[in-house]
Image (cartoon, rainbow, N blue to C red):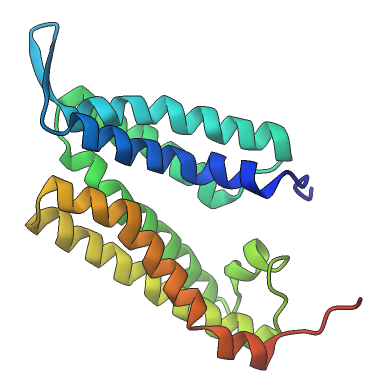
Length: 199
């Protein structure tokens, strides 16, 4: 079933808003330590605990308003609950930092399996956004697969070697910018393999 169209600003707020709230809350609480039931929690852990219900509420609102959620939105919400929950429960921020790695590995692997079968799973997700010839979809899918695996490696390198604050900046802005720049560089492919749409 096709998703219902909603105000694009509202859609963006529900998709990007939680990430920006997480970033702002982290900056506010990053140097504070909270004692709850005799256990000390760094600000990062408290912000993570608040992020979990926020992302669930926003995801539920998107589903309610549009009647549709993409596989990536569903998997992302599940992994946030699982890995964010582990970070809070075990008081260990490393689990939440691993979450982007697992997301990119899962989707990169899914696209890779499709390629081995001679199919573009990316096409079934994005065809309505940019109609391409089959050859164009296969090329784009190979490139996106490589992008996902590259981002997984990059996330691992940054959270394991740099500070939590650096990782938060990278997660909030770096990953988003990398994906944006990637699609901007694909303009030649879109022009070459794009399908003309009727008026």
